[in-house]
Image (spheres, rainbow, N blue to C red):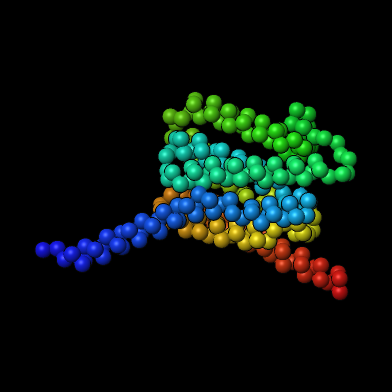
Length: 245
């Protein structure tokens, strides 16, 4: 005879686990966008975009568009698909703000457009519409190739590897921007700290949920880049103090 108390405890334990699982999924979907809130606020406050590398947006847009097509071929957790959709909208919001701030700058500069086809100014366009057009064109290209090769398991795995390879390089543009500026001024340190917290969380999530190996490898590389950027913050702040002294 089954003990009613034991059954009740098992049901409560199962309910608690489901709640934790649901909360973890929500954090996965929206957590990736949270680091950009302090950076968005910093750009609004300072009306300056020089400290933030918009190529971070390029990397994440390409990575998440590729991940969506990877999901079509290999339907892993729906959570990761929703995360990609949220991240794409977040990157568009960041680009829209950067374009607005740059165009409101009183310093007169030449306008650069996608239609100029000038590789020197790739991803340095002044119009937000150009970024949308580029992403639409890239998505159409991916769709055409996917329709032709969707039956190939090798192509699907390659698509997944490309997606996570781009995502693993998320922090690299910011790292290079800091090196170029020889400063981390204008970059939100909170953003990088949230990057690291999110990367540690999602890498653990990938391992625990036995997601495709591409995902946890990507997360591990991202953590290393996050650490490098935080070391830049320490190095450049010390360098500034020495100069002032």
